[in-house]
Length: 127
Ligand SMILES: [Zn+2]
Image (cartoon, rainbow, N blue to C red; front, side, top):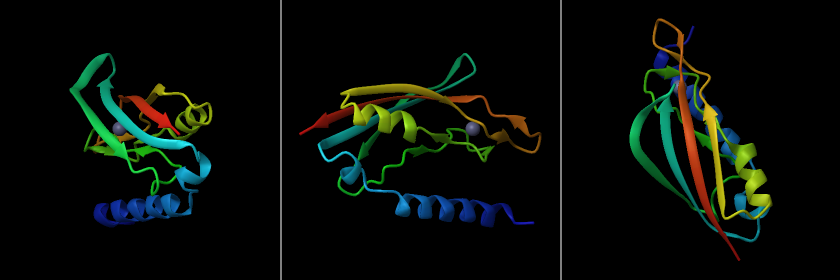
């Protein structure tokens, strides 16, 4: 049985390894020039977080992998893998890619399901 801390460290290591072994975004989508992600979260039908988080993707260095952490710090094994949705949109050279992804994690010791939903909007430019 792992400690919580080493569990988190282990997860981060796995994620790092996945990011390192993924093809570079600039190799997958050579014409992609800039990419920005606007991230929002809601919980059930309630908007959990009014703020929009802006994430600038450094295209020459970024992996072709879009893993977004869950907004809830209590959430375990949650998060959002929107790689498929993002890569489909980028392959189609869409300027705006939007989508939603529910979290599959669990909350705290009660193990109740996390109901966070990620809402993202990506803005891309191509050469
Ligand atoms: Zn979650």
